[in-house]
Structure formats: C-alpha cells, structure tokens
Amino acid sequence: AKEAGKNCYVHFRPEMLAALLERTQLTAGLRRAVELGQIMVHYQPVISSDRLDVVQFEALARWEWDGELIPPDDFIETAERSGLIREIGAEVLRRSCTELAPWLAEDPFRSVAVNVSGVQLQHRDFAERVLDIAAWSGVDPHQLVLEVTESVFFDAHSHVIGQLETLREAGIRVALDDFGTGYSSLGRLQDLPVDVVKVDKSFVSMLHTGTEKLPILTSMIHMAHSLGLKVTAEGIETPAQARYLMDHGCDALQGFLFSRPEPAAARERAVRNSVAA
Ligand code: C2E
Ligand code: CA
Ligand code: CA
Ligand code: CA
Image (cartoon, rainbow, N blue to C red; front, side, top):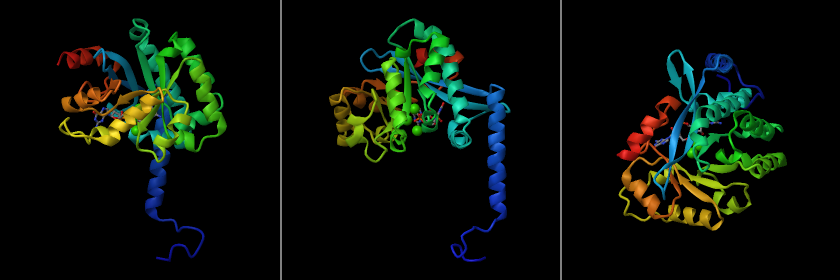
C-alpha cells in the first residue's frame, strides 16, 4: 500500500465502498420509515422527589423496522447527517403531544420532555415549528421541555440562543442534558438559556452504597440550585442511588429503577407498578 499522506487523496478501498453503501442504505431506509410513520416514541417517567409522583415523561425515539425496534444510538447520527432529524424531531414532538395530551390535561404541573439535536436548532424556523405543534395539539407550552446538550451552545450561531429564548418566553423550558460530561458546563452554566440540568448517568453510576460522599455530584446540584435551576438525575438503577440523590436535593429522578421507556399504551401500568414497589 502507498503511504498515506503523500498524496492529498485517499485510495479507495473496498471496505470504504461497503461503509458508503451501508450509510446510503441506512439513510434511504430511514427516509422511508419517516414517510411510513415508523418512527415510534417510548416514554420514560420522571419522578418528583417531594411528591414521589410521576411529573414528567421523556420521549425517546425508536425506529420500528421489520418487527424490531432500532435504538436511537443506531440512527440519530445518520438522521443528523442527512437532515432527516428535522422531520424525525417534529414527528417525535407531534406524537408526544398527541399521545400524552390526556395525561397532561389532568394536571398543569405535568410535562413532557423531548430531545432536540443541534441540527434542528440551526433551522431558523425551529421555534416557530415547535410552537405550531404545541398549538395544533392543544398542549400548553408550559408543559413542554426541550432537552439539548451543551454542544448546541458551542457551534451556536447567535440565532440558536435567540430561538431558545423565544421558546422560553412562550413558556417552554429548556433542559441541559448529559450535564457534567461537557468541557465547561460548570463555568458557563449561568450564561446559558436553560431552566433544568439533567445530571448525566455516569455520575449516578458512581454511587454504589448511598453512604459514600461524591463531592462532584453534590457541588453540581448546589451550583445549579444557586443559579435557580432545577436538577434531574438520570440513569438511577438502585434504591441507594435514589435515596442519595433525594437526600442531596435532587428535584427529580429518572431511571430503570422506576421504569424503562415504554410505549404509551404500557405507560400507566408500568408506572403504577414501579411506584407501588
Ligand atoms: P438521553 O437523552 O441521555 O436519554 C437517556 C438514555 O438512557 C435513553 O436511552 C434511556 O433509555 C437510557 N436510560 C434511562 N434510564 C436508564 C438507566 O437507569 N440505566 C441506563 N443504563 N440507561 C438508562 P435511549 O432511549 O437508547 O436513547 C439514547 C439517546 O438517543 C438519548 O440519550 C438521546 O441523546 C438520543 N435520542 C433519543 N430520542 C431522541 C430524539 O427524539 N431526538 C434526538 N435528537 N435524540 C434522541
Ligand atoms: Ca435526554
Ligand atoms: Ca441524558
Ligand atoms: Ca445522551
């Protein structure tokens, strides 16, 4: 083989063709799935620490393909690269608002959270589309939460911040997902247009007994609170983790301990069982 770097092009290898075809097929398959309405949403409950009640559901996309469910980690990146994330994101929001509307209508403090990719925020009509879907479905914007990761603020055109501010003025809340895994989360937090931080599950998984001290976690919670933000912890799998997070002031809890993400139909049954347990 020739030395790489000598020429300013890369020699085409058979495995590159295979990867390219795979990617093309994945994109084509995903486009078809979007058209056929095969992007599904599963919901995972979020429990409030004070009322021990389900106060929110997070919407998580699933691709139903040939009787199987493909997890988002296998298609979100392709969706972002192809631009399909825009349609998928809108579909997840539409479905969430429709499927949870009756549950949301019962209590104004209930909410639904959807994940938003930075690619969606690049489009200047993003805020308008979100508000249109809320209006169309009759869901109060105060009951909608958009989860973004810190990266949307790094490559941010100024209109990204502007759109989030527009949405917040309309009552929609913004949550900073995977908090603690970025580079400068702690320092920049006070400048970001967010209402909630979601402590990443990698921090929660460091809690084993519930009696140990985890200063990084407690200072994340304190700092968020001192900035007037709410704190949700995700990835809670054991009662000891839930106990520790409640004792240290976490406002809301989420994880397999309470329920895995489930289709809307299985939602109420799953929650009843987990809260009873
Ligand atoms: P995320 O937003 O951080 O969502 C949390 C992920 O952790 C979910 O995986 C959830 O099923 C999983 N999880 C929840 N509780 C536990 C637990 O106790 N233990 C462990 N080990 N895992 C737990 P999922 O559904 O496979 O989603 C993966 C990622 O895909 C999400 O991470 C999010 O970044 C992305 N994603 C999902 N749906 C959408 C969507 O509609 N739009 C966009 N842009 N991204 C999405
Ligand atoms: Ca999330
Ligand atoms: Ca997360
Ligand atoms: Ca994530």
